[in-house]
Image (cartoon, rainbow, N blue to C red):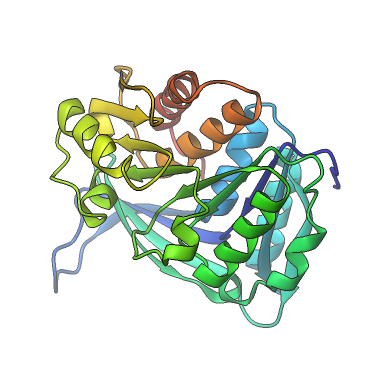
Length: 289
C-alpha cells in the first residue's frame, strides 16, 4: 500500500509484543504466574502510525523489520490499518520484539529487544513523502542519529516535528533545537529535570518548566489528565472517567491522535482534547488476543 499524499510521517520502532496477563507485576527474583499470553502488534512508532490512520489521516511509516514471522505479522497489521508501509525496510536478522506483563489493575511493565529497529537506513529517509507531510512523529526507541536525520528533513520541508520522548534519554542540543512539540509522561518529565508530576497542577508546572526549552510541550499525568503549553498559552485537560482495562499503548494512541489533529490544523489545546478522548477509549477496551 502506497500513499504519497501522507499528511503525517512516522519514523520509528516496530515491535512484536508478547503480552502476559498476571495478577501482579513480579518483584526482583520473583517467578510470577500468569493467566494467559497473546501476541500483539507494537513498537511506539508502529502504534502511533496506526493511531494516526484510525484518526482518518493519511500516514506513512518508516522503519525496519526482519525476514521472519514477526515481521510478516507486523506488515499485515499495518496494511490492514491503512498505513503506507512502502518505506519499511527489510533487514537481515530478527524483527524488534518486547515482552510486557499487565497486572489486574491494567498497569504494565515491558522489556524491548530492538533488533531490526537499530538497522534503519537513514539514507532512505529522503524518499519519504515530504512534499505533503505536515507533521513528523519521532520516539526514542530508535537511534538519535536516525531521529536527527529525519527531523532535519522535516524542518527543511516545513513539517512540524513531534518527539514522544519515550523511553526518556538525554537529547543532543542539535536534536532538541529541531523539536516543535515535546510529549512526555510524568516519569519522562521528571527525567528531563522537572519536579515530580502527581496531578494536573504539577503537570502544568512541569509543562511550564519544559516550555523554556521547547516551543510546545505536552505532559501527560495518567489518570489525572494532561497539561500543555505552546509558549503563548497553556491549559489542562482532565482525563475522561472510564473503566481501565489496560494502559498498554495508551501513550502511543495519544501521540498518534495528537499528530493527526495537528496535521489537520487544530490548535495544541484542541489536539490534546481529541487525543485525550482517544486514549481514554483505548484504555477502556479489552485487548484482543
